[in-house]
Image 1 (spheres, rainbow, N blue to C red):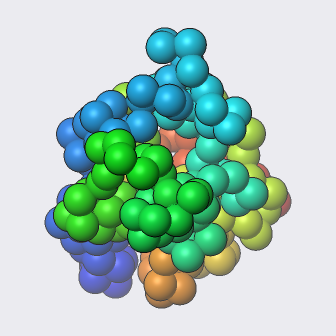
Image 2 (image 1 turned 180 degrees about the vertical axis):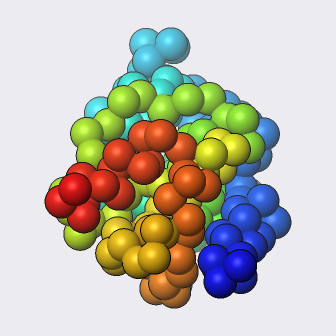
Length: 190
C-alpha cells in the first residue's frame, strides 16, 4: 500500500497530460513540415526529416533539433516561433505557418519527453540506452512511457526523477515493462 500514492501519481501524469504523437504531432508535421523534411518525398532540407521513426530518432536527442523534456533547447520549436519576417523562420515566410495552438501542442509534447509511442503512436526506432544517470524512457507494464532519470531502488520499487519537473516518485518494479525492469536492474548494478 505504501507504493500506491506514487504509482497513482505515475499513472495520473501520463494519460491526462500526455500529447499523443500519432494523433496530435504527426499531423502537424505532415501538414506543415513534410513538404521539405520528409524522406518519403525525397526532401531533407537541413539534413532533417520528420516522417519515419528512424529519421525522428536522429532528430529527437539531447544534441538534436528536438531535445526531449527541454523545449527551450529545442531548435525546431524555436524556429517555429520566430516572427514571419525572420529569415530562419520555419515553415519559411509565405508558407503554411504553425498556428499558436500547434506551437503550444508541439511545446507540450517536447516538454513531456517527445515520445513517439505514447497513446498508441508509431513506434520509435531502437535507440541505445542512455548512460546510467541520464534521462531514459521508462515504460509501465500497460505500455505508457515517460522520460525520467533513474534515482535508485527502494523497497522493491524504482525511484524515478521526472525529466520535466524534477519530482521523484517510487514505482513498484512489477508495474514496469520487462525492458524497463531490466533497465532499472542494470542501473542499480544488479
